[in-house]
Image 1 (cartoon, protein in one colour):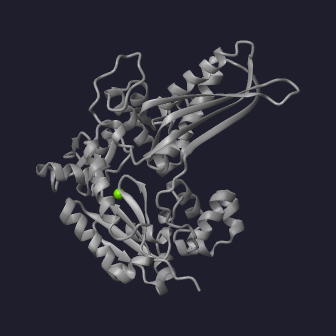
Image 2 (cartoon, protein in one colour):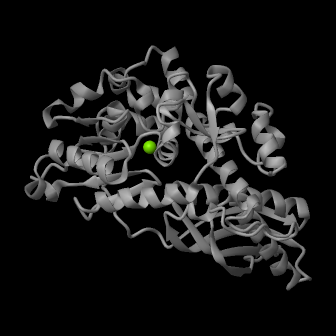
Image 3 (cartoon, protein in one colour):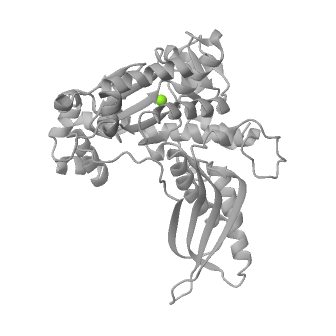
Length: 422
Ligand SMILES: [Mg+2]
């Protein structure tokens, strides 16, 4: 029989806000929020008032009138996040970083060196606290999903190890909102059917969940609720490119068509890059010409820049220029049937590096560089959009060119940020 894995999920607590309190001791113990128009992160003191990431600054101030807003020190977040990952790497080579401040560790092969999960988890927490000065929560279980739930239960600043023979007993009384993929909207849907705990979710038939939540999500959350998660911790070895394509039948080339399709593709690709903590220097577009009665011919155009890109608007702009340059080389082709974007030359965890406020302001007609005020604003907007989508689903918010036109329920703060980058 295979050895039962021991998986840890380590997650820094209120990371950006904790870093601000580390850098400026006068902020410690106070309710603070990183951001301005939109809350990017809130300290635990602020969370007690109900302040949360993705919330508008206005709403946050209503909930907590004494809230202090602080600007983000993105370079410090990146540096400290990297230092934490270095500590995690001391316990196992199998560290899979899934964002700036959290990672899975497979310590199955390390138990004989360092002791059981309780000891490794406690040692990680002690070292991160003493060597870096930040609180981190750790969860341990035999699979990724349960380890992540355990770390959420452990927060703030705690350690929860789920005993191997008590996993289902631990999991089933918890609220369904802790299951990966279940946000407030899905949670409300389930509540209407009387499904509030993970145990009640596990007891539902696959058929019922599929019809309620759709085939993909229904099957996924049903399995997770039954504690079935086979995913491995995958260190390094990440995909060499991230891309997406859109086929739309034979269409005449127009500015609207290119803008709309490229905007949608850039939104998808950049979102996936950010989710994976990656960015890339090479942007490639593919254009397929539509020839009636024949398989279309494709051409590609690439651009490799000095900086790795993962912001939606920058990717869209570069990709749009590439599409137009490809079309300009083939003036006789007036119809296309497919556009694709991919980003390669990927670098790991550069997300915050891109936003370093180190660059000189660029001229208005240039693509905003990472580090320029416009580049930083773009990162902040992307970050907020990702946070809102993680909670409320993909359709909840997006860029003007992608979604704002068709969604009326977008908070004004997002519109302002999107339309008038500071
Ligand atoms: Mg965290």
